[in-house]
Amino acid sequence: MNLPWQRFLLLPLVLSLALLIASQYVFLRGSLHADLGVGRLGDALTLANYRKLFTDSFYFDSLWLTIKLSAITTVATLVIGLPVAYVLARMRSRWGPVLLAVIVAASFVTIVIKVLGLNIIFATNGGLNRFLVGSGLLSAPITLIGKVEGVAVGLMYFTLAFLVILLYSVVLTIPRSLEDAAQSLGASRWRMHWRVILPLSLPGIVASGLIAFNLCMGAFTSAALIGAGKILTLPVLIQRTVIFDTKYGMGATLAVVLLLAGLAVNLISILVVGRLKVARGMTA
Amino acid sequence: MSSVRLAGVGKRYGETLAVEPLDLEVANGEFLTLLGPSGCGKTTTLRMIAGFIAPSAGRIRVDDDDITALPPQKRRMGMVFQDYSLFPHLTVEDNIAFGLVERGVAASERRMRVKELLELIRLPQIADRYPVELSGGQQQRVALARAIAHTPRVLLMDEPFGALDAKLREAMQEELRTIQKKLRITTIFVTHDQSEAMHLSDRIAVMNQGRIEQLDPPRRLYEKPRTRFVADFVGKINFVEAVVLGAAGDTIEVEAAGLHFPIRAEMTTPVGARITLAVRPERIRFLARDEDAAGWVGMNGAVERISYLGNVMHTVVVTAANVRLLVESAPAEHASGEPVRVGFRPADASLIADTP
Picture 1 (cartoon, rainbow over the protein chains, first blue to last red):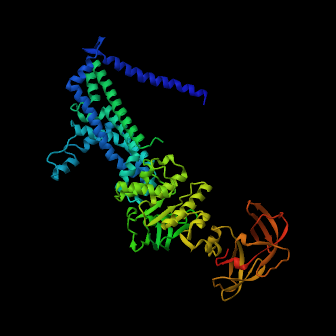
Picture 2 (picture 1 turned 30 degrees about the vertical axis):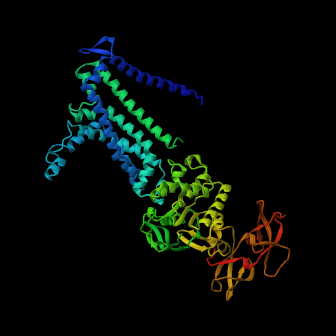
Picture 3 (picture 1 turned 90 degrees about the vertical axis):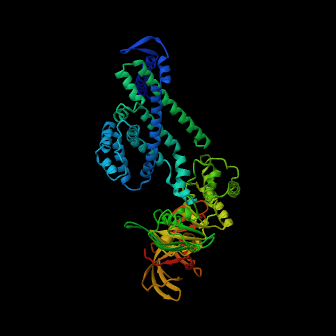
């Protein structure tokens, strides 16, 4: 295993680590200095920014909104993505790979284009709204711009393709014969999903869900474009704090808190699932 | 326990015929094997009985119930799969109790039933283990226990011992036979292994290209194969081209390997027809030079090749009429090229209608 070229891999490793740590270090250090206005930072180390974040409801609401929105979006996307992934993975037709390829291609489309598409679909005098209002299903047209629901739809649009691809590979690892076995033992299709497919894919569902959650937590474009300045998730707030208010200290603090909140949610989820797995003896 | 009746059951995928419409009756408590090479339709037939594949034609009945349209979970069958298909996230106990839970059996009763089944498969200590912690043989036995836990009407097994090594497979066959006899459960077993089929079955249906070629008890199948395919697939056999010289009653006079002799056969063939004489290698004996015992057909020839297999020896003999015969005998001292005389009793041979 002592191939000389392995040493060359050290360089990119050191470089990646340095970049990762350096940027986080800059934020962390910046967060410990008070803003003096017009982009200047105080010399003294202080926790004032953090105190403000957790006491000023403006900042704290933003943190809570970001976590809540990400969690709800993730669960909703899982609910939509799981059946799609299951059907694709179990498809015997030669269209299966084609459909999967379409989804992969869709995930490459930048979120800016997707948001533009959503705007067209939900335009006040667009086809969908005209139909909904005209048929009497709704009294007023739906709009997504500036609404939390709109941002949630945008985030779902952003993460759905990733989730479907991830869950597809999860379902593929479950042998089809387990489904046959469950059915031959008297389980209906619904019971089979509940007692076999769901528990067996749970670790994969959680892992995929966390990836989607992390994407949502850090998502700026859809939140900024659809939120239109009215829905202030942390990434949007960070951008405004740094660019508009030039409060670099507070911006850094928000960034650190966003990172830590994301890490905490991930760690807790992994611990919970790890415990479940041990309890079920799925260590092997 | 129950009987199974297939009437005209067939499966077609587009242009390809996977299983030709076939009739099959499995008696109450019988052990029937579907035997054949891969792609012969045996697994498709089993999966149609289990309900995983919808037949294109025909009806399937268990006792007097038509189950053709029922989904698998309503057929009250137990199935053992080739790869065991134990649920990896459940303990042995929960695996075995899976079907009992679906049928709403109370927890205390489930525990008793699982205990009873673990004793039946002689693994009373493994209730709390997970499938990954079991050996192949143990997994196989748990799969069997799981399949019979809910007292199914029929037990279906799809090449269940395919993944086990030879010694373990024999032990498992023995155990399955014991359990099957004890429970008197109607069993339909699929395998491509003819010795396994012979060992286990009350009757064997030999399948080829989507058809049942012959359905008989093992002994009859071996001794009186009706087609070349069956004769060839089940055990080793010599085929000798023959011509019908005459027929009287159930006796047919044939010419084969340069000899004339009468042979009893349940078939009618026109005089002059070309047919096949089939003789098992162990039915051919080495005879003394110029020996012509009553009832034996003897031929002179020379040893071409010898292979020593321990308990027996396989000798290939080329006769004077240039017919190549495989002879299975007790290990003997023959040398390659040595002139020998071999013979068989026509009563031990069979006639097969299809020509080579």
